[in-house]
Image 1 (cartoon, rainbow, N blue to C red):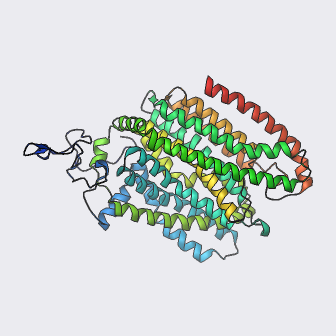
Image 2 (image 1 turned 180 degrees about the vertical axis):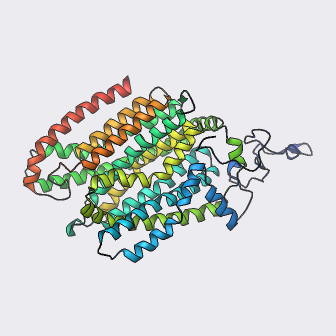
Image 3 (image 1 turned 90 degrees about the horizontal axis):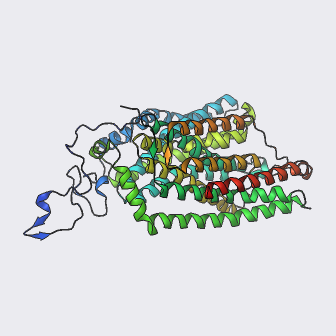
Length: 500
């Protein structure tokens, strides 16, 4: 029994029952056939209209004790272990209100650490409530909904950072947001996917997944990566000849906003492809993957949350997440100034790890259960949503708030992102995975984390958010040369990825 095995239920059915468990005596009445849809689920609960049999709880409204028991049990043993951290949640909130006006940096460090840890169980509850709701809807809709709910934590953090940013008064948090966008993609692609491959491969020679999931996902990721690259490449290539850097930054901001709108359009086309025009293909893939789960009969026998309880869990979790996000953001500048943690490391590594904790646990648990198509759907879906929806959304929100949020990332980070997408795309090409590939992905992520910890911004202009013309001209040659080399290497690697 492994650590990711789902907790056993108190009773086990004698056979693996699928979705067609209508009691025989209800199949016909007086010789008249009823609907072929199941009227009762695996536990004998009558299926409510509009609810999938797997998600039927057999109850209505709220049972407080059972609600707490189900939420604490969560989806797996690791998730249940994370719930032990819940006492830190009220402690983190209380410590903030006691010490948030303190002058000692150590008090603010304590606030940051406690709220950082408290984000994990709060985000875990968001993920679990999303899983419970996903059971109640068709499978493709469920995966999309679960991924969307998992990304709410990230959107909240981005918006809090954006609102708190005030470049005119020296509180510029936009570089942290930019680093967090790329860091979220890297954490999911390398750390989460690597852990999925590694954990799933520990007890198996190799795992397989469907080409329809991996090819569409890797192709979209490459397009999203190139879309995010364009404003940065434009700035790097034009800075050496631009007579007015302020005007150039204004052009970059305009390009970023147009790019954001186009990436949003690409995201909605991707959603339509998944849940409307090609949902039958994905339904069949995910159903087949679901049947691979050796613990499925135990998972089906567990008590489920009612829809009302799911909404209540989401309200509680999102309230906690929002509070912790606000408290965290207010401490970032103090931590950066007094403890030598640069904002690149804060945005690229620290913020993404905690905001993606719930999604990572879900995907790794599915990989352990040999449900690699589900795991890949969550990993790639989450990454695509960050690149095609969350990042453009924060750019549009900055537009509305009259803040210069753009997509001009540093060349160092863009190079890492494109290379990571290409590496992962090559691992996905053969439709197989093993623990070696997973270990390599995690090692690469650790190397990136170590490099980022010591990395100081090499863009003397301060990007689109400040700095002098003299500083900009000093670094423009190196940036343009690096952008050119990166574009050339990216084109060659993309050709190999797409055409072999």
